Image (cartoon, rainbow, N blue to C red):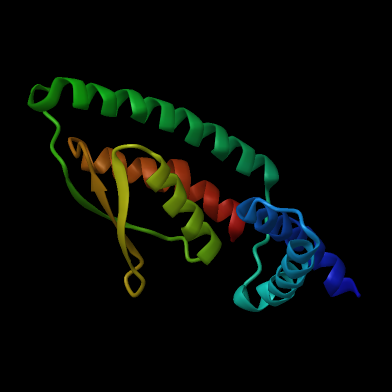
Length: 162
């Protein structure tokens, strides 16, 4: 019974998505959508054997604020590069950044942060060496970007997830 109660929020969300995608609230769609949504919601925990634990919610809020500010700043910088073109002097390139974080949820959050920030793309992660490869639109300061990733993001994510 407890498992069913934990599955209900996801099942409701899936049912609503089913009804919206089918553009119908007929009895058939309600029954079929409910059966599919409940089945998927009950099977979903099998796909996530490692559970995330949010240790420091205030750190997470500070990190979210930092990320929002960095995204705004990066939007401005990328806009400048686009408007000025070659005169902007941007030097695109790849950068390898050694990481200390090992938690899969922290790594996923770091991937989202980097990908959401204009001008940077998560290009790869060498699991054996725990090295992140980024493609950067303007790689004028590789050491500064490495410190930014490690100090502003990775340190906070390690505090939150590890």
